[in-house]
Length: 153
Image (cartoon, rainbow, N blue to C red; front, side):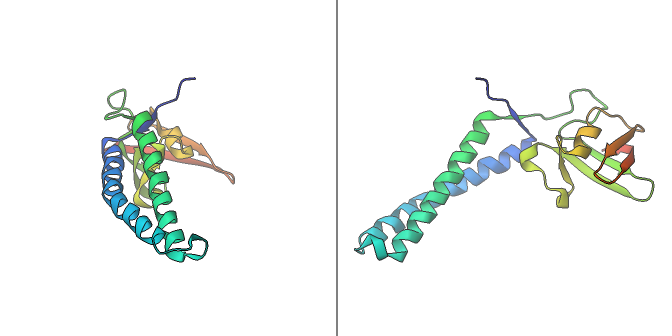
């Protein structure tokens, strides 16, 4: 079975590496807290033990997830075709009423509130491969929305 790649921008992959390093620095403290709590006695009624075990479990779970992302993650540094929208592209759009700017990123680093949309989101999917001046049509649950690509930044 072949595992598909997960696409990232270079900054998105760096954030994952940084988070992993931070968690690895916190892990020894969590292990020590668990050891101390275990020495307190009766584990069935030991709240400190349960809290320390939950913290270590959470850290380990997140580290496993980050390791998986690092194993299957690939950086796409530039659009595949120059002058076309791809992962890493920043675009300025207009819907006829207002202008907006978005950066097209991998699905694990999207944050629409920060103007970062995934390449597999409905709008991101519609924008992929488009060029400056082209019109983009996106189907929403209520209607069809038309955008014009004003600029690829």
